Length: 212
Image: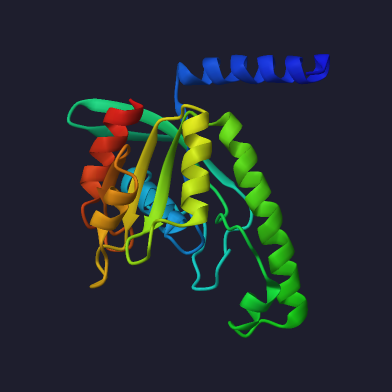
């Protein structure tokens, strides 16, 4: 490792240590359309008076750049934790501009989105080096045992980051949080609906206990 890289790494660890005295930086991760931004917005609405972090859309990769909201304090049962929320772009192993054409976008717009989405995936992975914990959002209506989920869980485990897995969209009739628990039994799984707010208090308790 070069001297410059060693200095940057050491400086990053110092900044991380100093930040932890006041608050933790928590990344919200997951595949496209799992509900990451919906969850980030729900947290801000519940604890910051109605602010939102970003817009949501049925088109995949609506979030193509990481968005940061600092100083969100969550208080549950006498426990308090202050976090910086990082809403990250959706993770994918393959991004094809043809997929965007299905939503009525022009070819030019589709190619631009695909390029930005690819850059967003790279940015999301880089953010892992500057986090104190991760909330991984999975769509409870889909098979959780995917290459994307396995890869990101492996990356988080390699960095020894505290992890909460959110089984989202339990308001839908075909949701099965049990499949997610069975796929990743070594981690805490909290079933919620970020859109409807179902079981959201259980997630807040888990955040306070896991990251507090």
